[in-house]
Length: 143
Image (cartoon, rainbow, N blue to C red; front, side, top):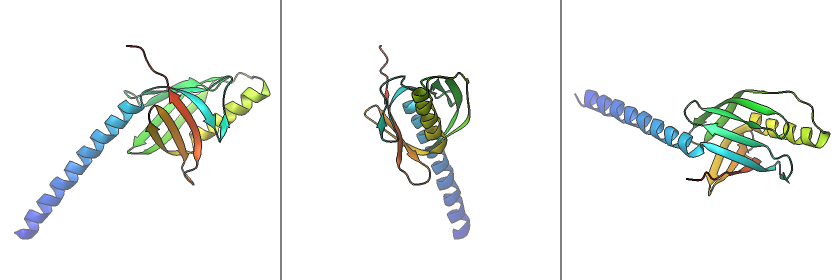
C-alpha cells in the first residue's frame, strides 16, 4: 500500500512539475515578445544598418531585418534554453560591411543555446561555450 501511495504522490508531483514548467515557458515567451535592436555582435558594436529581431509569443515566430535583408523563422524556448530554426531570408546584395554584419548576425542566431533578458537587454549565449554572441535592447512601445 505504501508503494502505491508513494507512486501516486510521485505521479502528482511530476504532473505538477510539468504544469509549472509550461507556465514558466509561457511567461518566458510573453516576456521575450517584442522588438530588439542589436547593439553588439561578437563583441563589436553595431551602429549603422542595425539588425533587429521581433519575437511573437503566439506562434513562437521571429522576424526582422539583418541590416540588409528581411528574415523570418521560429524559436524554441525551454526555461532559459533558446534556439532558432527554419530561418530564411531575402537575398539582396548590399555593401560588404553590411553583409559582414548580416553574416555575423545570422551565425549568432544559429549558434544560440541560451539567453538572458534583464532591464530590457537581451543577451544571446553560445550553445557550445556560453560565450556572448550578441546583445540587443528592447524597443519600448508607447501606451
